[in-house]
Length: 247
Image (cartoon, rainbow, N blue to C red; front, top):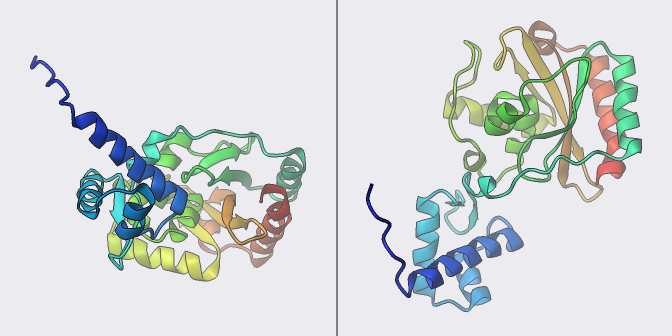
């Protein structure tokens, strides 16, 4: 085994600077420019550009489509462990009320960590593996709600893995699908993770419009393909009730 190369005197400073750049992107939000980062951290612009290029190359950051700013990349999400928090009692009551009205599984997910985190899965209709939903958000309705909200959804998609013959696995096709989600305010997947199952999901937004959670119905794939309008309206109504409770 090769012996580790000892750190030089400059390397710890470079590591600290790279971490500071990451922190600044988190604090400022998607779209922060190299010039803004350089000014905030009092770093030479040449150093800032060098660090940004390194972090983009390692997929901790991504350049936004307009090439003017930066956002967190897929590897940055792995630096934080998602915390599963129990929703408030009033929110759980809203979810339970919907469960009493439908025969489908009803699941509540939080997007606070930048991933799909199930915070109230239906105990009578167990959802797909939580780690799988977090790792491949493009194949779940809840994950598509999250992706449709991103400036660049590719930053959160590790790979376009195929699970069934119905899985959307092309970049162009997924982009079209997410465009429909953003336009219509409802996401669905029909037999893409499991051939016999599908799900519908609608966003739960804070009073200021931020996406904070998703409410989903899971059921037979053929029912998801042509959902009953009354069922969709029930889902939307309960998501609206959750808004002030989770925002």
